[in-house]
Image: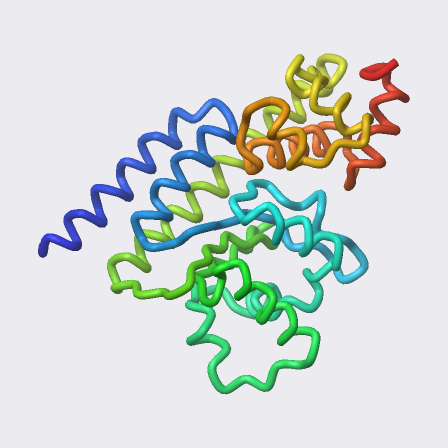
Length: 247
């Protein structure tokens, strides 16, 4: 086994080991971020794929995209124009964006999505479609300015993606079970973030106020929305008042 293959295997097994003992989405976020950067990727995301009549907001499981792109993508509801999402619906194998889209005649909306993603250093990427026996469709996707992956690296990223998605589903299932046993178990930090949202602060402003990263705050907001079974900040605030989290 050559030195690159050895290093790739080491990164993969370190990720698997860390994820096996992960207690939170933040644990998985950190491990996946380190692994993604080793393979040359600046950002990533894990999400379910919504039906044609649905938005993607509540399907996001883990967000490692640039915050501005994430908020723009949601506000424009780009999921149904995104050619990468459409590819994931149609195939099982992982793919490099530039290779899979080569020669395809993209429509105007699909070209807009890809062109705007380039502005956030997501010129190319690597995506892993996931399809479960129960019918769940999901995607683990990595973005970068340039993709240069060996066969060993592609295989390792594929395994990492499947493992990360399974680990997240397990954590989400535990959260759902906990929600049924108590009043949602909103943490003090989550309550504070909801209060700042109710005061009209954006995720960027909240991150500055609390001295945390934009990415962390955005994931905590998504986590609260998932706990409350809502799809946006306005619904989160309204539901928080309804169930007594805010008074």
